[in-house]
Image (cartoon, rainbow, N blue to C red; front, top):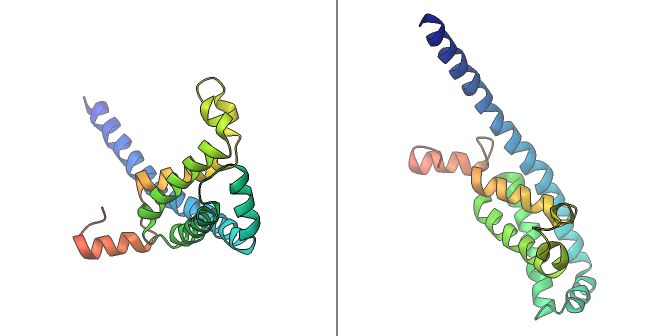
Amino acid sequence: MAQDGMFKKGYRGFVKGENSLRHILLLIIRLYWGSLLVMTGLGKWMNIQGVTEYFSSLHIPYPQVAAYCAATVELLGGISLFLGFFSRIFSLLLSILFITAYSTAHKEAFTNLQSFPSQFIMQDPFLYLYAALIILCFGPGIFSIDYWLEKRSYGEAL
């Protein structure tokens, strides 16, 4: 019985210590993928005509509007992730953007997800989508503006 209590106590300590690592992981994900999104968003803005032509070749309706929307969501979403400010809202928008990218530019990988999952994983939007979903589901962590605003507004982080 004493060993059982000692095991529980040790396990509880392990889990509490390990849980603190999630905030560091979330920070790393936000900083890395946020900065990449800022660069890709800026790249789209700097070559908006090329992006518009590419979207047009994919038969996306209103390709110029779509190009501006994609560039804006990537740029502002990247800034949002990097700072951890409105990160869940922008993570949702980014997730929608990358699912749309899959369903248009990477249609074959998207439709063959069940048959060839490795083809889906190898596409450019995958890791961006994965990072956005992680932040959407788990939040930005304690090293974020969102965390401190939630704590101040609600008395606790949400």
